Image (cartoon, rainbow, N blue to C red; front, side, top):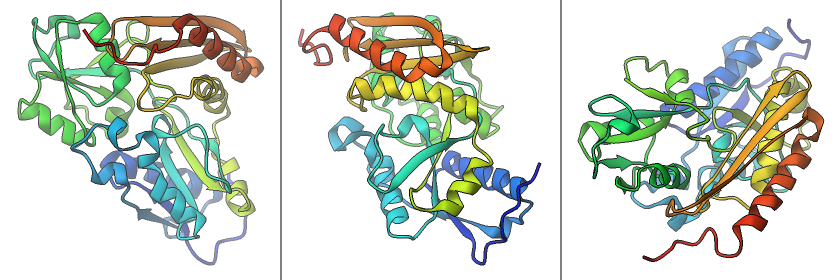
Length: 316
């Protein structure tokens, strides 16, 4: 099905980060828009914007400002009119957008699972005592320490290719990547072991692509409505409400997953101490339309059970 809108007199500018995965997501957005409106690719221009998070890769995110580091420059470009829309990995997105911007379009969600990747193959259970795992995700670090406190964890910043290169250079014995990224880049040659969500709950919105626009740009709103995936939107509404109520950031190990079954939604959430010494989880089944309220309520329960100082590092 194609939609009828006037042919644009100048290309719609799509802002994105410059990593291979970010570009693949921007190209997918362009393909879907071109197909929806029967437009040539020339009707869309992909514009790469380097973010602070891309420039600084030798320090943990928590030391330099958290999730907004991957969006700030892109959002500023949209506010000043340099670009028209922005394509994001939703797990990188803060729950609140700057005044004047809206994030209300999602593409169909990919595989939500984490992938375990080791130099010698195998699974997490196969790593010997004292093995070294590289990851920059506090969620993954905490989940790993909870399951395998015998392992060492080292910081692994950079895009997917950079982390695989570090693994090849034997900076670590293993790492975690998102199955979604591997799939979108068609990296079938990378040996991986998917980790089922029952074993390791993923990050909020993992595997989802979001498209941001100016609130007053009605043309962009009409175009994006044609490619919005309603089911992904329903799932992320619950997960991101959970994250927002927890005031989640890159400094807090938080995981959540919403899954749909007919008119019902199963929502699972988890918070962990950063040192992996404790995890508190919850699991509810509700009506889909109650997803956001359920996410907020679940966050309140977990915070009450966790108590003050739960997200502080313990000193042994």
